[in-house]
Structures are given as structure tokens and as C-alpha cells.
Image (cartoon, rainbow, N blue to C red):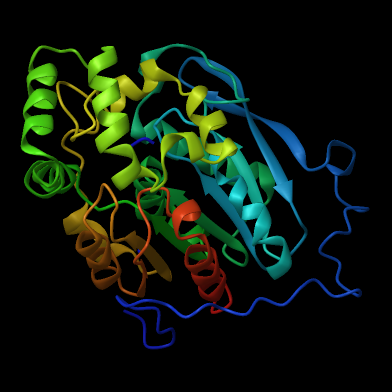
Length: 340
């Protein structure tokens, strides 16, 4: 995990035609920061977060100025950084989408208390709520976009605080970790050469998750097929920069060491909100990709299960669909935002 059908909007489980996005016109106030409090920092600010262990700061950065459309980006991992979302800079400004980069506590530019007791989904939900309040986001403008682990966090936030949302986007995440594990075991694993899968399983059984051999097999046979569909030496710089800063202890506690599911006592191992999706009434976009580490049919089921859902299918994408099927991904999201 390293690391959404609607009568008014026909994004469906088929290839989406490119969306024509208008450029910012000369009369637009999108780039006018003159009256904004974060003008002198270019939109960046630290937000104090109250936790059971005291107060810490998390980092956010606003891009653009649109009172009606404000997107908060929740990165994956857990423990990655905002940086792999930087492909958004090539799409959102031309559509006048105001958006916020955000490093969750323990990640990137934010404080890292290095205390595993803070690495709980419920506490992260309260963190997002505090960030929302600090940024002045509300149901007239607030769209939450969560990718991978960020999709879990966005789902949990919506189930508790959807009255604060204008829209919800769950990107490259299914509603059940056991479902994710089953797909990896029964579908993705057998797609590998038998001898490669056998060796990977043997290394996992021996606990050799960080060995050079295990990582080389994963990097050669799994990452370029299902995480980001390019050879590793061609991966985009923001992705490499983000993943190089991964908070591995945080990732290990919540996700576990395996690339084929969540193992051991990882806290996300039994996470499953399949039966609760019907409670989400806010307009929701689920984004799924053909070659993802997640089952695209499972991501379509999210759109079918919420009360006002739309599905965006990316036939060329893997888990990092914002790079390997970028036009369809971002233009589809922009089209959804334009319906809100």
C-alpha cells in the first residue's frame, strides 16, 4: 500500500475521454494572495495539533485562491509525504482548484514525536479535523482527497465528520484491508513467475523483508507492474523524494513489512468499512486503476455503496495513478469537482 454511480455525472467503469480544462483568465483572482494571511510564506504554514501527548505542529501549504473549491490532500504510506502529489501542479492551477499539501504528524515537514501511541487511525482523524478548522474549510468548499492510506483516513473522516465536507475523493484504496490482502494473494501474486513468487514467499516466511534479495525481487517484479508502471530508474523525482523520506517505523506499525498485504500485528490488518459506506451521503468519487495493488472492482464498489457515488476508472494506471495515467486521473477529478 506504499505507498472512488451518479445520475448527474457519468464517470464510469470505462475509459474516460480527456476533459478540456480552461486556463486561468486575466481577470481571475486565483493567484491573488494579497489579502491572505499566509501571503508572505507562499501559502505554507505550521498548524498546532493537540494530541494525548501534548501539542505538535503539522505542515501545510496552500496553492491558489478559490473560495468555493478547496482540496486537502491526504498522502499515503502511512508515513510518506505530500511530495508525491506534486504532479497536481500541472493540472489543478489551470482549473483554478485551490489545494493544500499536508504532511501528517510523523511525516515530512511535520513534527515527528516518535511515539507509536500516536500512530492510530482515530487520532489521525482528529488531526485532520484540527487542520480543517485551522485552514477555515467548511461544507461550502471543503473537498478531502485521500490516496492509499490517505483513502482510509478520508473514509474514516467522512464517517465521523461528513457534515463538514462538500465532497470526498477516495483514490486507489478499497474499503477493506482483508479484501486487499486476498487480492494480492489470489490475483497479483500468481501473475508473477512461479519461481519468483516462491522465493518471495520463502523470504517473507523467514522475515527477510528488508534483505537485499527481497527488495530486489519486489523492485523488479512488483513495483513497476503495480505501484508505478515505469522502470524504477524512470520514476518521477517527487515520488522518489517522498518515498526516500518514508517514516518506516510508522509504516511498519500500521501497514507491516510485507508488500503482499498487512501482516503481523499491524494496526490496519483488520480494517474494514464495507458495511458502513452506505452512511456516507456527501458526493464521493472513487478512483481505481487497472493495474493497482488494489482490485479496481473493489474500488468501484465504493462508488456503488455510498449514497452519492461516482467511479473514475484509469485503465493505464497502477497504484500511483497520478503519474502513470495522469491526464485521465486529474482531468477526471477536476470534472468531479466541477459538479459540486
